[in-house]
Amino acid sequence: MTRSLVIGAGGQIASDLIPALHRRGDEVRMLDLLPPERTNGFRALDGYFRSAGDPGWTKRWTAADAAKGSAVPEIIAGFRPQEVYLLTALLSAVGEGKPGLCLDVNMGSLRLCLESIDAMPAPKARLLWPSSIAAFGPIPGHPGGLPDPVGDDTPCFPTTMYGVTKVAGELLGAWYARTGRVDFRSLRFPGLLNATPPGGGTTDFANEMYFAAVERRPSRDFLREDTRLPFMYMPDAVRSMLELTAADPARLSRRTYVVAGLSPSAREIAASIAKHVERIHPGHRFEAAFLPGDPRQKIADTWPRTLDDACARRDWGWRAQYATLDAMTPALLDEIRAKQG
Image 1 (cartoon, rainbow, N blue to C red):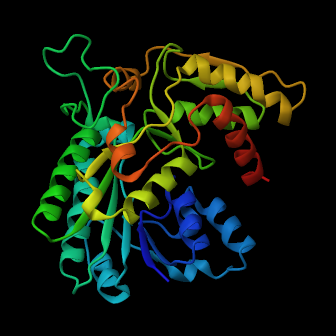
Image 2 (image 1 turned 135 degrees about the vertical axis):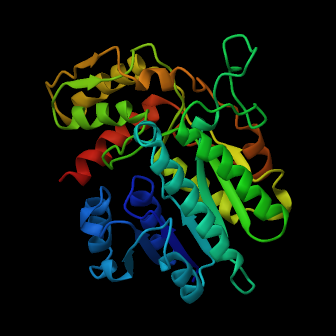
């Protein structure tokens, strides 16, 4: 039985990752700043654990600050996890409004986690830390700002504090790995979509569209309809985390990998939802309005349109299973509807 620790257990990724770890038989401990019932992911997690016959799952939850204090070092020293998934973060849109807090939370939690794992006796835990396409930004002198697609070796010029913390974190983790201190691994995720309510990211407009469709209400979206961004359905994101964490270190050519799913425009997402929502709500016509002028548009305009994940494919066999809207949209609509009861 693998001992796994999930830090940032109340957020969007954790609501799918924790059930996946539990299903494979892991002993899972969880930590978040908030108690479980106050997190966005509580409804999904509680529903899963109750259906799995584990109603006492919250006893394995610690409410504490992941960026400072003694909770993280004490749990890592006492529990001795074999795998640590550090998901704590202030996302892009929230981070721009609170840049100092974004820096403290995103970098403080990573530094504390790295130091705590480094202090473990052998064998030490592997650490998986999500990065983001926010690591990229317009390259000085490059026509159009960024190549299309963007790959692992594209230079990083982030335009947000969130992106700055991701680039800095990648470099910090790579140093710990290179010096033999911590087996650090990271994924530059696109926008992630699942049935947990959005939490302050620039790509949240897409998740909001799906929630609006299930709830039979109009969607009011803060990006232009021609905005094209990379996305990934959460089951693919979770699988990529598990596969990279399990990969043989000898096969890895780098510590941070780009992973790709699909790259639709906002207009194409709306059209896909309109096409498929009829199946769950006969007669309902989905409506989406795109409202210009939101500051998040400026962030989105600096990010990649499409991604090249050739290195992940070559090194550890990565392949997205939900690579089209026709594959993802019906599954996501069904997932949101099921979790809302």
